[in-house]
Length: 322
Ligand SMILES: [Zn+2]
Image 1 (cartoon, protein in one colour):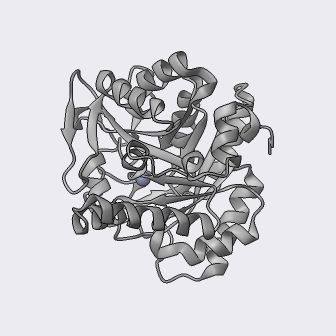
Image 2 (image 1 turned 60 degrees about the vertical axis):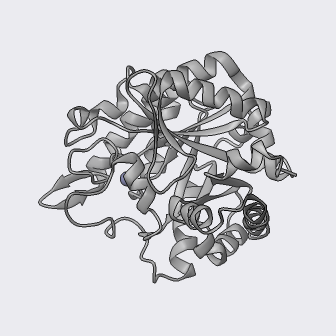
């Protein structure tokens, strides 16, 4: 455990300890190969898959509006995928290129979070190494470590472990330290449910499993608080710097319970399915403003220090950030 990680840069301190909504927000992005790519994502109005050149412009405009925390997901072409997601740790990938460019340009004034899981890079779409149609836990963790270290090398502030394998936070922390990345943080998706609210994201990241589902690693939607608290406490003990609950709105009660049980900062992921319900159901921007403000306040009240939300940019554009 390295308690200085969350205090390491001004942007990290604002994200974790700032009291305004604007400090809490993290904008997710989907990066793809190529140039001049700016593809709208079905079901997620206002969110596009972008190549690095366009994404740099998007983030520049976000930064000017005061959005300083960004989460990057790599979306791979099918020909780059294999059974171990090996391209996910390749320093020439669009994600790695983007992270380097962002840290070169903005340094300590930006918080760059990178998604670490296998599902966007495996040809079968699963979050791990598959053997006889089951996900091997420990073999998967070793692949996750390779991806995490590769992101740290290019300057990511936080490795965001979204996979839900057992023991991965401990292994990530051990290897980060071994490689000298003492100031690289880990945001753990500690309590991630096998939810039906992820539909538009899987479309966006092209990460649907080709057989089966994610129920052998993600949390059962029927499970109670003790399971959630145990997951969070375990990750805290293993060295997670931020503990996340995902999805957000259907699990505000879990967020509150876990926030009360752990000492590390809490994050919540306001997921794609929640986002599209708001966007589809509220074409009128004034109505939407009230709804989005209400959602952000609900997350804060339930204990979230960090809010990952596709609404962040619209909120910043119109100044709904106080
Ligand atoms: Zn995954």
